[in-house]
Image (cartoon, rainbow, N blue to C red; front, side, top):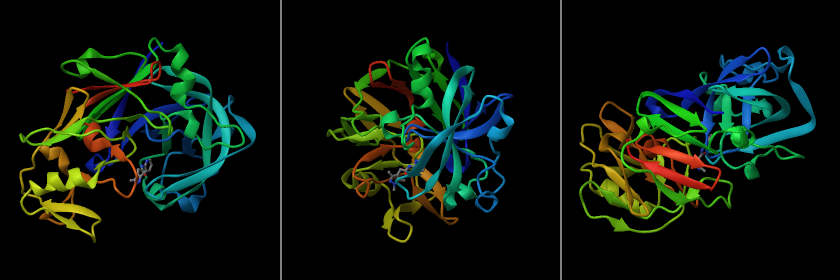
Length: 326
Ligand SMILES: Cc1nn(C)c(C)c1CC(=O)Nc1ccccn1
């Protein structure tokens, strides 16, 4: 069993949305696949109207296979302060032809402002480890964990693109989606994330700085968040770049040519083109950087700015991450 689903970028590649079928007959909602969390939650008929902005809903009362998980609740707060909570159903969930017969589908009875404003996204589909799923009293598995044993290979791959359609593949590796060899590295899943140890970094064509630290591969985070020492070195190479406390990060003159950023994974070198580090224009002339500090988080996050330059294998069989350029 295997399948593939497209993933479409929103503005600035802020997030990527993929169609998911829930229930019988199938109801299609576009969800933000998030390798940094483990809850599958969705706007439903139970989400207050004043907390929505036109989002497509899943309505369990219209699904013959929906079952309420009696007494179950969920409540999640993300690192950026956004939050949601509610009750739980199980239902049939299909992604790209891969079907889980009884998947915990978390119905949002409360969503915070950033989710209310995001009209295109009906919710999140967590792809981190189920050890950080928030359902109580009985913690639930992710779609991938439920599907894994039926997949040809116990893995999914992520191929995000800059302002173009990419894909999530389940159960197989499509050799046409990357170049060179895939570099596998062990995952530290002790905190429920797809954690790994980068081996260093390089700005443009300057020398490689060997360094080992902890980072997570997180499709649900837009930026590349790294230790401030590295971030300062990167932006010191960009004329006119400055840390702007009001904007909460480094900004730079939009017409500047940006150097590439290369990260190491063991001997592998992942290359992020310079223009990927222009996240968004703040004014006509001032742009916000795609590389920012992770110092306030306590760990680094390889978010979409980095992932959209790579083909990444999330292997739940041997708990490894595979990295390749494309
Ligand atoms: C951990 C963290 N701290 N800070 C400042 C950020 C941005 C994060 C990552 C984060 O919040 N990701 C996220 C947000 C909403 C939905 C899914 N993922």
